[in-house]
Length: 486
Image (spheres, rainbow, N blue to C red):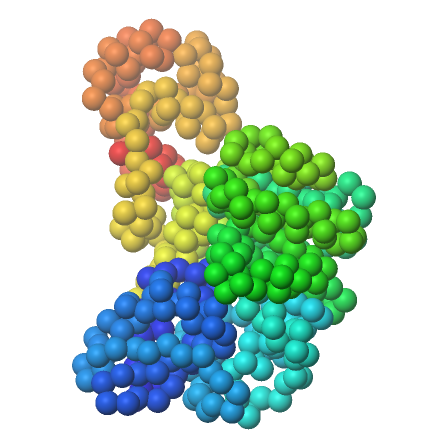
């Protein structure tokens, strides 16, 4: 009964915090005993215990109380050697449905390697279980077991969809993974907006290098670097912290912009940076802007970051978004019509994470309810996401979208050309302008080369007639309307 309750608590917590935070901080929790109204949860390291307690402790207690009313609080403790903690759904991918759960500790490619041993192996050594044999970490490796965050086994080079906006960054990441610390590529600085693939490429580099067993890799966010540095100062163990970082072969820091304004942390990172580069070790950094645009960083640090390879990831194109969605849909095994993929690619244009999340929700809805994925279902299931992307539709926007969809020039919308390949999309644009805007017929006509209002009336009625007899044409027009409507 307790295991089932913990499975439900883990699933709810995973849904609330998101996949990345769950895998980083909460996956390693194991279920302990229950003493009256208190449940004990084990974590492999003191750092993880402190972090989870401060960020999620109250929520864990609330979720447990909702599942088992007799339990009033959850106590987080470090699992000591020899302690017997039963297998937990949070640590066992088979117990809680989680397609993103990383491979087991026996597969070192799925976790960063620190001092020659994977973090997955170190965490397994810290979480006692006689059922699974594992190598024992060296004292030095054990001391660094909580230094780095785990790498996500999904984020490989093979699963990264390459297109024109990200091909240069992808090529640079590949080069670093094949030949770390090579001249001109150390450090590698990746920058771009949210959800464009920076973190994916960093994980791919880490997985590639730690998987061959020759390199120790430490991946962490800039926030965690700062947290670990502050903790080291408080515990008077800064020398140990420095030694831990300088012992790795590859250091990867994600979201460097969070160090802006943190002068002491910047100075420590600068010294760590110099020590590693001087020792021939590889550094990979990501941020939302290029080094020259990160105002608030010390000049000496900005200069050092820009002296290696700087690669940006541009905003995605429609073609790249379609490729990403097609790959994701194919991997899911759920049939998603091309029209739905086009609709999503047109509607969600700024953030790949949000794009993939929208498709994941559609796929989950189809699996849970056994219903096919359609345009109507898409609009219903994703109403909140689509509403956030809604905007006031203008005739100019309608003309541009229709011209792109039918592959004609924008100037053809107001030209005198009467060829069907031009006239039909122009009529569709007039029809949509009548349906989606409050403009009068004469106003619409003026936007289409000063045409008479009777021309607009004819276009509207003609498109309506064609939609009744031609299902494919009606689907095209409906797709355009759904992409444009507010």
